[in-house]
Image 1 (cartoon, helix red, strand yellow):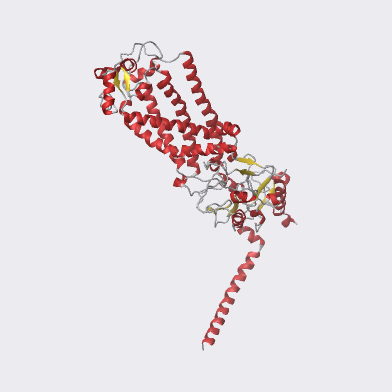
Image 2: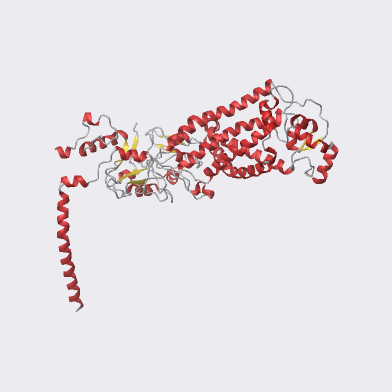
Length: 204
Length: 351
């Protein structure tokens, strides 16, 4: 079985927010909620960097571990989904999530949270019918054999989605091609020894 | 005429653009030099930047495309909260609460209830006004509901989901959350009122030290000196006045996310709330035991408002000495209640 993962190549992301828009459009996400966000560090400086973030569908998902109702589950493809019928809007998944993925509608009194909403890797969620699934969770593109729309529509192909192995292969090729002292993975111990990354274009 | 003038402008603009473009071309050619470009190009993303992300630092040049986001890129404290909650608070909370229940059960089975040493005299002393009693039972009921719903939020999923199935579990847990979130503030306000009303009776006195040294009478023979409230009652009072208020305050932080408090604040509030509330739940079991099964003649104080003279003498001797001349017979108590409905006018309750 595949292990679905997102990966954002921060050297390619140009902060166009196309992924954010694609996601909102594909999933008909309700007002006030934005499943994907683009974060820019050191904006306007020489080392500016942008990265698109949403639910990363963790192997050991903190949201799953802390949920008081046990509403999360993992699909065979390694996608973390949740059952909105069980969600009580306590916000614990939000406290635990490293990526700020869970969001809550805030139309209720006293800021009481509604049912949690997050990225589903365009895999929908538990529901009786297709219509209900779309209403609650948005598109189920995975069931149609398609990848998440955010990654499909990324103009620079910075945002990659798919089986972890394939995503890693693509990224590895990129690194080899453009060169990076530590193979683009921080603190890569073997970087210099293996000469993992050389600038093929320059040495060519 | 107009036509000629606009033509003139057009030529002027074109001339200006040509002059300007010569300058730009030179600049562009200079930049095309790869060596020079290397010195000005954005450096690759390095380990330091990822460390900056992990530290949670945002800074002035941090941007988030989400409208009202106050998040950093990586919420590293989330994992700390998860470990504290799941590895420490959750298991040890259960041990403390169940342990307390076990100790009390053993105590009851081995040592048993504390009966009055002497016969009841049948004369009554007024102890709790109707207002205090109503307040006590309201706060007590709310406490029990909050404790049960709180325990359900922490441990329910391990038991009830498999036991009852998803449909029932869904309404059970959402009901728990609603009750907890809406009754919590009411409990908080009423507890503060109750604490204020009882403050005077619970000021620590010298003889309370002696009370604790003798374990409230468990160690050694005979009764220990106690005023209107004994050492144990005062300890419970001050536990509620400190830990209880902390639990209430942290509960408000969690209950009203509309004031813009961040995730980190709510993580700590949650830990404080859970630790404090589990502790209070455990101790409350002791309070409930002593007030009901544990001590003969105690419960009637909080239900009728009156206690027997013998009970007062044995458990609150200093208070008894103060008020013994105000003892009423059963008939007088009945008359008091009949006319006033409350018996609140009896003077033996220090106001």
